[in-house]
Image (cartoon, rainbow, N blue to C red; front, top):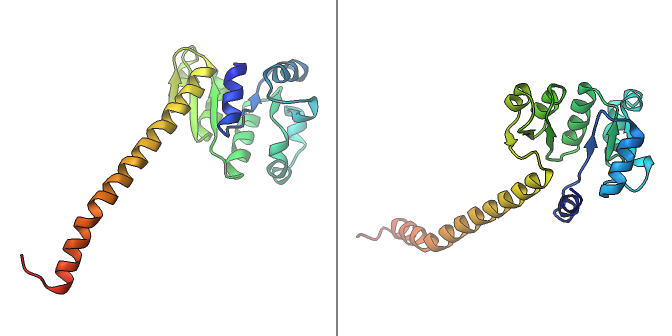
Length: 175
C-alpha cells in the first residue's frame, strides 16, 4: 500500500483513512504509510460529533485520519469533501460503509465485502488491493486523455470541411 499512497500523492489524490479502529492504531498505520505526519491530523468520531458542519468544511483539509467512526460519520466526512468541491472515492467492504459509498462520487466495494456494499458501489475491486484502485485511476486518466486527443484531432481535421461548406452556403456558391 505504501507505494500506492505515494503514487496517489504524485497524481494529486489525497488519501484519507476512515476506520472503526482505535485512534492510536489508525495513527500508527497512517504514519507508516505516509498519510499523516503526526496525531494532530487525526480525529475520532466523538471529536467529529463536537464539530459543526461549517467548522468541518473549513478544516477538512487538516484531517487525513478518522478513527472510531460510525456510518453517519463516514457520510459526513464524504459530504464535507464533496462540498469542498472535491471528487471523492470511498472504499469499503462492510454494511456500515454502504451509505458513504452511495454518497461518494465513486463508491468502490471490495470483492470480499458484503452484498449490500457491492450493490451500493459503482465499482467492485475483486482482489481487495488498494494498489488496484490506484492502477485503475491511472488507466482511467489515460483513456480520458486518449478520448480528448481523438476529439481534438477530429475537430481540427474536419474544421476545414465545415468552414468550406459554411462559406459556400454563406456566399451562395453552387455545387
